[in-house]
Image (cartoon, rainbow, N blue to C red; front, side):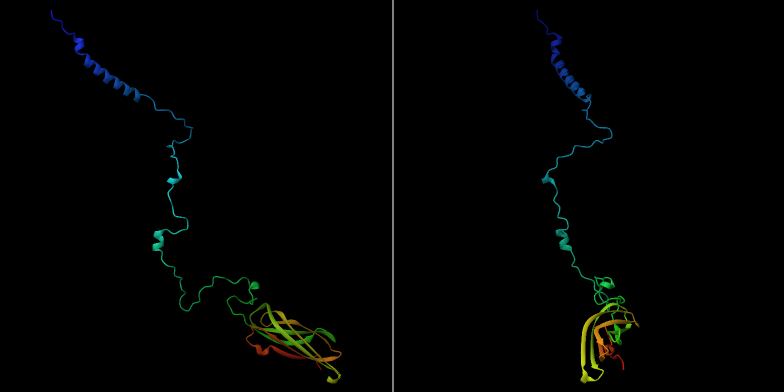
Length: 228
């Protein structure tokens, strides 16, 4: 009598394949159901992606500060200084310091040329019979002189009261003096000459020199001291 194969053995390969498929599906479902790995965050902190490690060789190269780039050098236009309009003087970059610090310009109005007509108007002794000779210098304008230096030369030729045969005396002083006078004002300057009016009568002359005087013709003056 012939034996028949049991039905279970006939379906055994099919069952094995189904079991493998189900096992694979179960594994995938188990991975999907697992929670993501926990990360420790402090309250108030924002989540940020991890920073990448910085390497010196990765730093982008930039042209040096203050150095023109090649494309800027090629297109740079040459600098042309603007010329002032015709008939106008170019502006001055430096301004004159305060009047007291400007050499040769003390008390004058800014922007105007310094000019002052100086005139020796008088010569007199500060005391008699022995004293010092003084000279009066008048500023005829137009500039106010607050501290202007000029040169002054004075000569005193003394003749004895009894005549030249009884004696003479010649005195000379040359010095630089400071004038402080506005237009119409007079400044008194010490000539540096000392006289003895008991012995002599003096013919005194004084002359001043200044590069700002437009009228040097009145810079000389003569006086007899003491007068007859």
